[in-house]
Length: 325
Image (cartoon, rainbow, N blue to C red; front, side):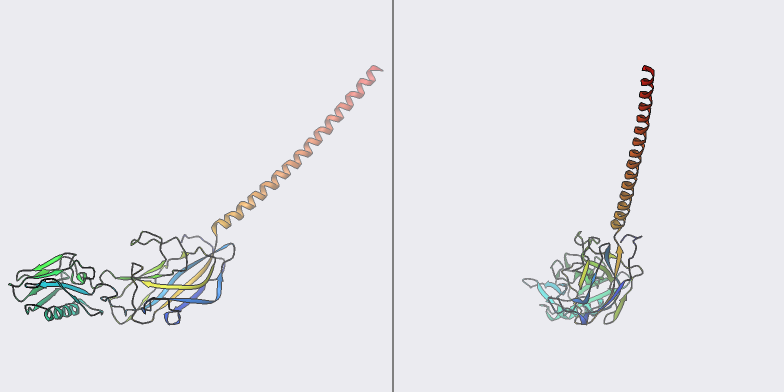
């Protein structure tokens, strides 16, 4: 929001708790809801409304790997397998060591050749190395599937093959956030044309991007030093809808029924063009008054000239008559 705008009256501070909202989520993710105002917030003719998210308390209760996130499978096949086996990893909040252990257990339980798999994580390079216990058995991993957990293990979208004692090593860094390193708080029913997201290139209903703390099962707070103030196109607010997603709006955050809180401020600003209009109207009125005065003065001047001319003519006519006599 551009600076220099004048506030017309005091702000309205609104505290919103997810437990108090009317649930509008299709699934039971507790990531959205509606807060109906007891009394509508209405802007005057010369005002516009603006909203800002000044703080939030968010539970890190959502899983980094889950069916909801579509990143919870690993696809592999060994020598003598006719096709790939797609294994589903239980949903949860994993670090890289925990996930490696979980995948190792699944692979060995589904190994056609009784293979033991070893996962080694290098903290210095932030990469994972995977080997199998029999170099005569080839293992292929298909990291191109739509629901693969490849980013967690640090692999690009490709087929990786273990065909030597060296195994395979990550070709990108391990990312246990799977690119979900922030959440987006949205206000779907409050209109604006001031925010654009890179995921779509279109105008967005996002009011804030909140970085995700890695500490799971805890609460983290969001308190920006300079909140974004979003101008609104509507003159009246009857309710406030809140939706919390990842960057793609259709990818909802599943809070696993944990509660969150948001605090917003509604402000009233003088409409800039309304002020300019008043100035213009004042200038126009002054100009018209000046024109009227000028016209009236001109009329007076013209009448004065006319009177003087008549006096002159009358005087000359009188002199002519005297000469003829």
